[in-house]
Image 1 (spheres, rainbow, N blue to C red):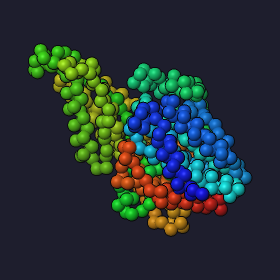
Image 2 (cartoon, rainbow, N blue to C red):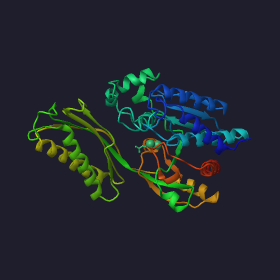
Image 3 (tube, rainbow, N blue to C red):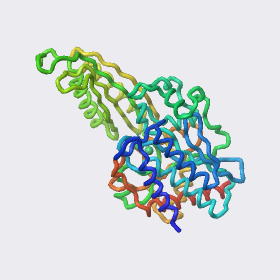
Image 4 (cartoon, rainbow, N blue to C red):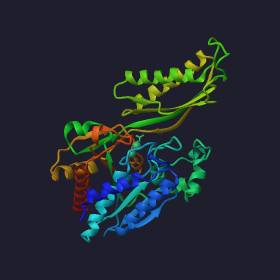
Length: 407
Ligand code: GLV
Ligand code: MN
Ligand code: MN
């Protein structure tokens, strides 16, 4: 019989083949690929004696009953970035499922129920937002987001409806909090630290804060052959100046990271001077005050660049997420579980965003990182060892035992 880690790895491989595009993994919120992936996960949940529901935004939630009133949430997200790896988010859901299957095989019920959440949107690929799924779960979804559009002009409200959810119910669809013991998320590290240390897993101390901004420069489109260089109002040149300003600003601040991951130009043709350039800015730091200060200075810089070129600019903050520490008690229990199964405990910050940051609004949260090869992530080369996945399953299983003893 196959062991739990092998099954979890095979399931990640299987889900890695469910994509909106041939030849690369892309599974955005509200897509048909997401529906197919959720159908597969829902089937595995039901085989593990879990009752399955989808909430108003389409988070998939499987529940394994316990003998008591309280509930522990495990899980992560099922959406991906574009040209993604197979493990970011998905592994956390598969490890959670494996832990429930081990309980079921032993016919064991804990003194609390376990809910495994497969969140519908953490990456924000489609709408430029992050934590859409887990913010609905946490009851913090903001109604103004309903009008945000994807690149095809489809709003979040329309996408939710098409996916079988209820856009009018999102703000009130938070999970009731009075029965929650906490939320524990397993995730690949997405960085090189555990590999350098030689540790299979790490315990997360906190999750970085982030700002996501949409910046648009507007100049004037024109003929590439006839408009002299002097006097051009090339929006892409303004954007290029801004991109380098972002790199410089982040480089001056210790532990700050800033990325322009998307640029589109209009009209987007070889022999036309770009009249508009739209770009994304992703800014992160563990200290919210530092992030706020750098954000303001970049905003001023964008204005200065536009004015200097006789152009306009539009600055729209699409999302701000504060830095979130993990819960000291739940994290101490997780660290104890790692130690008692025979592994060193390395505590580390997370520079990536995670659903745990959103769920922290309603429950104590803890996170376990799993070593990944070369620290590579948001890349199809993402890779984890079966042995490390086995350690994660053991650690979470032991964490459940410790939590049960404490009840
Ligand atoms: C999610 O991967 C994020 O940190 O943006
Ligand atoms: Mn993730
Ligand atoms: Mn990710």
